[in-house]
Length: 253
Ligand code: 13P
Image (cartoon, rainbow, N blue to C red; front, top):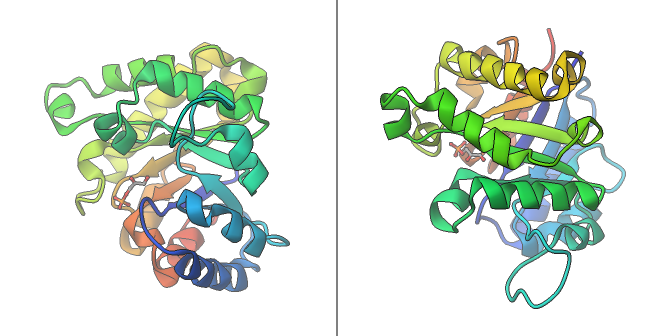
C-alpha cells in the first residue's frame, strides 16, 4: 500500500553536464518502471538544470539541505521556497553529514522540516545512530530523540508530506550495510514511534527509507522487509546502471 521511494543523494558530486547525462539516462530507462517513486538530489548548482531536464518524467528533483528561513541575510544558504522555485519537489533534511560536519541538530532539523512543508515541498527527514551509539545499545534512544526534534511541530497533515530515512552512520559510505533484520528492527521501531505520535493509520502511510551502502546486490533483500519502503542511495546512485537496478529491486513483488 506504500509506494516505495528510491532517491539518489548525489552529495557533492557531478558538474551540470555530468548531472544532465545521468538524469537523461534515468529518464530514458526508468520511464516504464511502475510502482516505485524515484528522485534524485543533485548539487544546488545543477538542480535547476536537472529539474528542467526531468520535466515530463515522474522522477522528482530533491534538494540535499536547506536553511530554515525563507530569505534574508544568510550568506551561502539556500531556502526551501527557492529550491521550489528552482524545480525541487522534495528536500532532504538532517542528513548525518550535515549533523556531523555542519552543526545540524535535531532542533534545527525540525525547523528545516517545517520550512520545507511551509514551502509546499515534501521533506525527507534523516535519522540514524553512530557506531559508538549502536555499540552502547543506544540506537533506538538516539533515533527517538532525532524523530522528536525533526518532527517537532508537525501535525498529521504535515506527516503526509514526510518521508523518514533511517541511515545508520556506520553504514554510510563504508560498504558495511545493516543486515535486513537490523534495519527492519529500527524501521519497525520508527513506525511504532510514528503511530504513537500521529496515529496508526497515518503511520501506516509514511514511507521509511533505508540508507547506508545500498547496492544492487543488497537492495532487494533490504527492501523486501515489511517496514522498508525504499532507499536513500549515495555512492551507487552516481552510476545509472546501479541506481536503475536498485529502483527495480524496490518494485513490490
Ligand atoms: P552510501 O550509499 O554511499 O553509503 O550513502 C548513503 C547516504 O548517505 C545516502 O544519503
